[in-house]
Amino acid sequence: MSEKIDKLLRLKKERNAIILAHYYQDDIIQEIADFKGDSLALAQAAKEVTNDVIVFCGVHFMAETAKILNPDKIVLLPDLNAGCSLADSAPAESFRKWVEQYPDYVVVSYINCSTDVKAMSDIICTSSNALKIINSIPEEKKILFAPDKYLGRFLIKQTGRQMVLWDGSCQVHEQFSETKLIEIINLHPNAEVIAHPECPENILDYADFIGSTTALINHTLKSDNNEFIILTEPGVIFEMRKHSPNKTFITVPNIEGCNCNNCPYMKLNTIDKIIDCLEKLEPQIILEEQLRLKALRPLEKMLEISKK
Ligand code: 13P
Ligand code: SF4
Image (tube, rainbow, N blue to C red; front, side):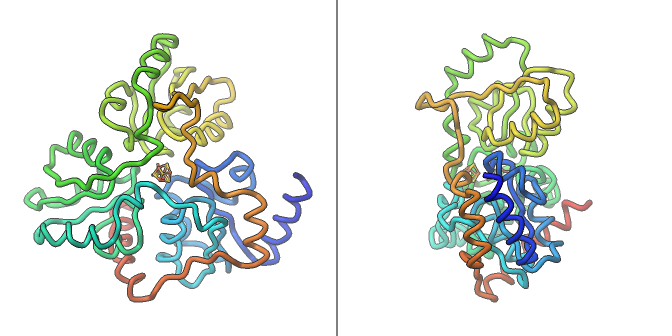
């Protein structure tokens, strides 16, 4: 493997490229990444990149977001099939018809959506800033929220705002088994249960702490507790272990009984594919300029509010 890594690093230098990676990537990719983050941190970082090439080790909507925010850069996604079940749950045409039914609503879309959906939205949010974004909308305004119904329900509960929700979900976060979770809690009564808000309500009900990927990582770092039951994609454990090598992180099986809950899309990126895309400068994210500009507006609003 070390020869491959040497080749990758040489190519990265030759191409003047930077590697941005989400915390759900395989450990080896997290090790070689120049910058790691959750969806918000990656969008913020992508906007500031000065290198010629961004290799985006995440999923398609994240690489598209990087291209929307920093269009002069070559944005590479090592595997173009790295999609997202949440983004796929909101096809552009059905979304357009839905939005048209609610003309005076503010359209808030979770960043896990296509560029077309972003272009039809008033403001974007991620799991790190969703509460802040909803609270920035005047009380008298009615809200449409897409595509994650579970994050939407969590936000309704937290803010008391009425929202009409799109019926979408993440295939990874909606599959945790409640029965297995109860068994694990009983086996580890002192462990803290920490969950991502993309999980359904029956799972979130058991959580001691709910937050975005970065918030969950930071929580394990700051908490005095030594044991954590993790209700999100297990890729996060790499960063948790790095900061807290003596703490224990316990995963929860999904409803099919597999003790993984790996995001199949995130895991499509590999070292070989990163080398390949740096060699060929393909596959690139290409966006039509008018569409990019429409999608840029709600993203910039989000970034502006996130600064406050
Ligand atoms: P965050 O990176 O905002 O925590 O979202 C998690 C996720 O599912 C990314 O696809
Ligand atoms: Fe999409 Fe879920 Fe995978 Fe995140 S974990 S990329 S929301 S399918």
